[in-house]
Length: 113
Image 1 (cartoon, rainbow, N blue to C red):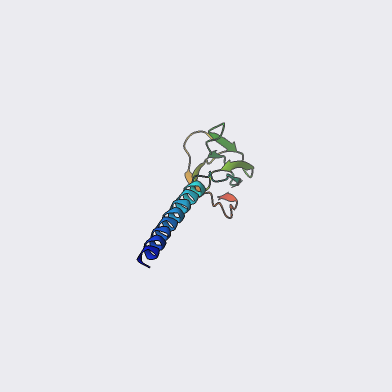
Image 2 (cartoon, rainbow, N blue to C red):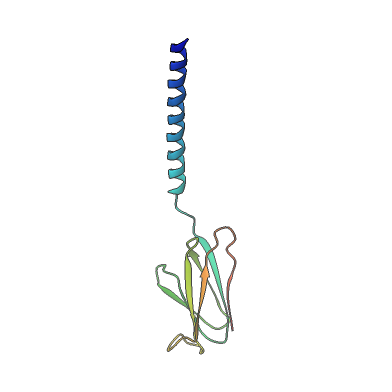
């Protein structure tokens, strides 16, 4: 009877270790998957130029007054736009606007006056 208890205890221990190892491999592989990029729609609702810094093939994009621009953004990454008081993105910006990409519900990034 003692031998049966020892065998069952060893088998239970091995099963627990195998289960723990399997779970750790699954959790590592799930977290190692890259997050999908999300489309970010930027709307310039100002009378001036807006420069969006987005780090794609070109590091920034200028948006004319009342214009729009789309790019693919990384989830949870924060992006910056500079708002200029005139029709061209030159000189000193009057302010900056920040946007963080929400991977569940990426809403529009509206830059108002």
